[in-house]
Length: 175
Image (cartoon, rainbow, N blue to C red; front, side, top):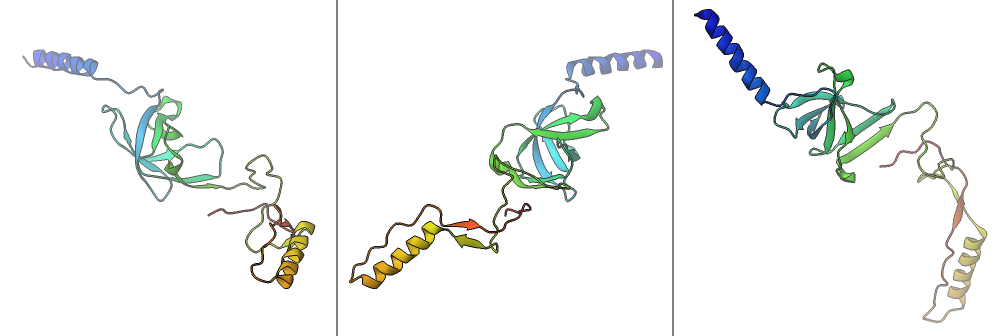
């Protein structure tokens, strides 16, 4: 009798398992970011019901030195390195908006370039800027206009470029 119940139980288990979708560990699944942990990992809620919520999932980047913080609710893709369920990763962005990315930090040994003219230095608040000839000429015209004016005085339009950055930095933090 016990043997018959074991076979019946095994048959029942097989029927239930075949009716439920199984996780394809070689596939990517859309997930919502529930929270981000101090170590940068994320807790995820998959958009499919047959995958349980995932905790402490590392974000996968295309190169080392990247750190990000993401908005709760952002959509990412959940996958498994080499199809191994022991190595889940979150990568790529499944749509979303620019607000989903809260901060981005890239550490590099030499430099990080962004944009077509990235070889140029960037000016910071304390970097000196010298007035160019157009700015000097405009400032002289303003002084002359006010010196000779009887109300109302009009200020001549300023030049489109007012100066040249004397020194800048290849290392810039934007906040």
